[in-house]
Length: 81
Image (cartoon, rainbow, N blue to C red; front, side, top):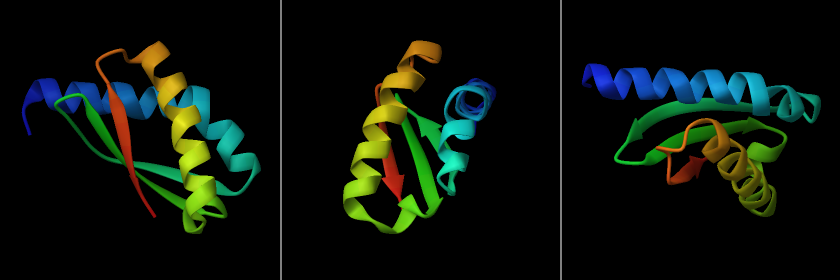
């Protein structure tokens, strides 16, 4: 990974931890940033919402919207359970 990619991943992790993580943790959902490249943030959802396809889609849409506010370089999110 390049230094630029590492910095972007750190910014994504920080934004999610500060602005998204606390709300997800209340429902027992965990989020892990796997990679950030070419405008795509790959994340893993775990816990309660990590196993339900409809929950994953709803959560990802909310995460994308919030993340774009804080890290506009991220165009979309790919989530894996």
